[in-house]
Image 1 (cartoon, rainbow, N blue to C red):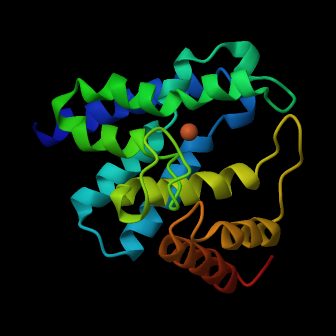
Image 2: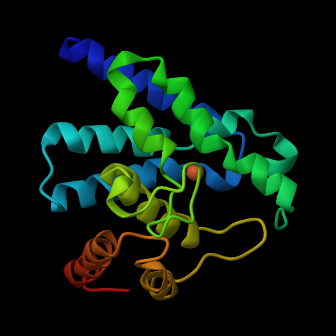
Length: 198
Ligand SMILES: [Fe+2]
């Protein structure tokens, strides 16, 4: 794939991700921020430029499977019932399935499939544990959780940065890869030092 075509291809996919996010005003811009955080973590881990790009793109597209979730569930201003939650959970495998048909996105698709796995095996869709979970998925999981916690939702106000950090620490080793949590918090605190505020 030549460089210009590749760039345009990624832009087209980004437009698709934006269109899907527009269905839910509360999550507008969410995956763009998750993508930004994920790229910073991937860089900090010293991954190759190519790996960084894959993880960044997977983060941008991680929730495209939500296209199939009914509006009534997606925009419900209250906690979900068990059945509704089961419906939402399908989005990880669905999103991966959509992209798996594109040869150059096979790895991106795999990262998306596993972005809701838990480090201790209690996540979905496959119950993978630890390093069985693709590194990109483990990164997106932390970035996604932080971004969601620090944003307003229909049923709760945004958490402060400090409360979100405490939640990430609480989930380190169970929901999240503890190494990624450490790096992520380091980035958050470093950013605070650099800015000299908040
Ligand atoms: Fe998701």
